[in-house]
Image (cartoon, rainbow, N blue to C red):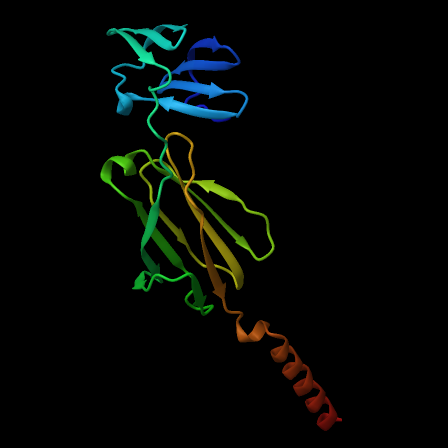
Length: 212
């Protein structure tokens, strides 16, 4: 998509070095100098996405839909962009509620953990999507996209090691929240620790010595 809200493009109109694009889910303005995207949807007052014609007249944007003719002032059409905020409201280990912290120490026998989160306001929540990355220490981020209206992630049977969980929210205008970072440390089973290996070797040596 490369920033477009929809892959179905109906009309493209140049505005100096910028572009106005009508899609199946809204009208977008692309500032090619800044490489930024701004979006108009039904939440902003559009009554149809079926745009027949799109025209730029000086400081006005005019478009004809299957329902009516619209004219917007380009300087005022977009609302002030708000950085989305979200909050983690529940954490469960092995399906049981636990306190919300920035770090979790899990024994290897209780290595399943889940998180649920929300953004402020019902209307805002409908326009928010979430992304997360769970990587082991020193690994590169690997971002996964949650489906719309999904604000829950669960990790089952994590192997031992140190993890970094990163979660961020994205608004319909492609504005990202601050990234929340959570550390998850899963203990190593005792039989995988070096001291266990040393003990086994010493026991074998001891047995061999007394056997012969």
